[in-house]
Image (tube, rainbow over all chains, first blue to last red; front, side, top):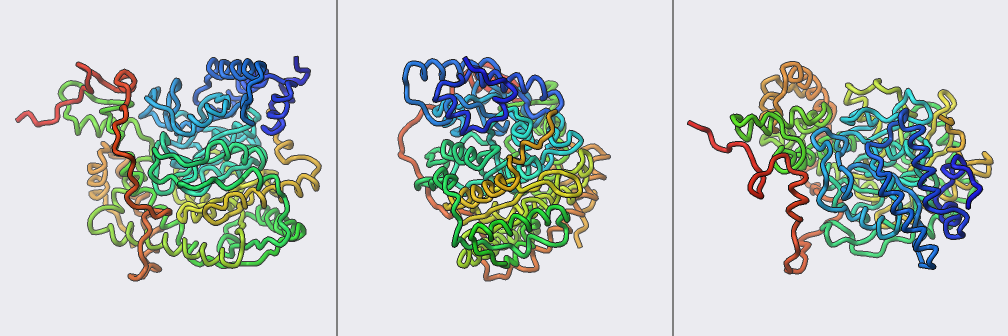
Length: 502
Length: 98
């Protein structure tokens, strides 16, 4: 039996836990129970989870322990607990997407990600909170109440995947799954002092991922270290014939990337358009220090210009609502979820309108109407058509930049975590949080956010974003591992160790 | 300069099947105008000779083998349906009565 206390256990990273499990120092049941105990202790305050699947998680853990004891060869993450964003279907627990319109909905099939996690014997603890249908940057737009940032419970944990990021930062789970349409993995990672990766578009199957904007959505790993993210990335990525946009090519060796912290001779570009005005001084200061570290580690750092990035936010807020308004038409109260006003007299159209009025929150309605507007005849060419051309220009900016550099870097977010309530009814202010993360989604390449320190003015986490060409996700991990190690050497401990005890 | 009117918001809400309250209609009229104004500069840069991108990974005609596969289990679908009758979805009337 283990002599490690629950409190120590939940703070370990997944790679360490994996070694302890395979060495027989701990059991998966002990580890899973420690996470469940931590959830019971702190989630009343944090509200990272919408549903905790206690019995099934313990049953999976027991099964892993039994098979390990019988000498079976298991995967690297077998028996390690994980928190799953509630936008991915999983049989046995509800999938709500943070919306009242899907309250309690039991999905009829597992998403491919869940299938892969189950096949890898990962212990899924439950489903995490999110902005409704992934529309938001603060998790305040959840139909089930906001998630709080473990660094300061009066502040937002980012969004839409605030639940997954907060679960990591509150030590409720060592691993989590997020989805990133305009920054929903990277921005929460940045403001909670955790690591998040948006893989190359098409790298991780979208089958069973409830669609927000199909040409932008991509699921990816969230963790407290670069290596942990790589281990999870390896499990969930790969070709899936059930997603027609899935890339049929080998997954770049991300674990090798995370194990290779050598960036000598690498060319790193600073994006001129993702700096300066609008970026908090403490964010800039930490970013500049991190860039100096990259130079010290032997990389060649140069400034590059991506002139059309200035138009990315505008293009995104035309393309995303357009796709979302089409995708969310399926929530009509006929086949799944909520139905309102079906009194035996009302027509199907009246019931649909009442259901959507009652079931959707303010941000979802805003974006559905914006998308309906952008796609209307007479406006289509001026808005949606033009936005698609800007998308081409942004891809060309990336292509030109990647001719001279191997990766690009920027601050992940312009500011640290803001106060709950501060921007909830100011959509334009909220949209600006994603100004640095959106270009990657439009072009379909890959990016990572990792913590680089606390901002001087508020002692809150700052994230650095690394962007790489499509299908070179391993480069993110190589640069991320180098920087993470240098920061660890300098500080003597991981930044996440400074998170409040709660 | 985008100026979305109250009537346009009502029309959009109808098209999108949202039964907005008076208060919501007024609120969204202001907000949608502000958002459209903030994004309409996209038309400044994109010239006629720029091809549109609808999708980051260009793929066409992704087919699977033409082999029958089982559909969803009926009991599972029923479990998530708002209303069910005679082994089918029960829906409100779809035709006007007069």
